[in-house]
Image (cartoon, rainbow, N blue to C red; front, side):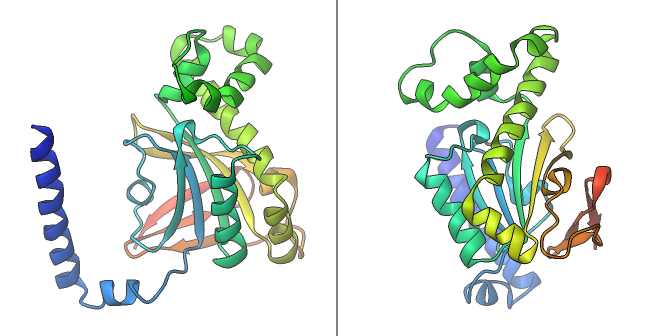
Length: 237
């Protein structure tokens, strides 16, 4: 399909989608236009195969989103920091989810020694640092497993940055904000909890101890965050 045809198809598809949603629920768009109250901040990769709202089975208005190349969380990146501050301090999200994924081009680039070129090499510096810090472990793995492992380690490094963020620390202490690290397997469509963040760090918020599963309800499904090793699960409604 030619480039102009893809664009025309996208606009046509939007018209069909908007018409279907409006017919299915006449109040959907008017209600959406009154404001947003998402319960999840999702920080993910810009990869076109990782559309967070779609893979979570949720709807517009359910997830506040920040995406960049290789889902890198840098404490000096004002873009990421501003999204975190707005989502946590103003929208009062209940969950911050950092998601890595399989077949990540950024991870592949970080594993190699060749330069990508331009600003991308600068952007991928934190991921290359992750590679260097775990060189022996990564070298012992096959190519596919190595690509997955560096993506997981990248999420772990990003979660550490999130846990050191002052806005997040305040929200964890004051209202029990939860931070999660997850991995999306493109080949299966499944999201896997990595056991990172508040649950494993023991930061339970003001009440302390174990708590009941937290449920984020979408229009057609709900995402259940469980304590401990059980991770997260999707349940259809």
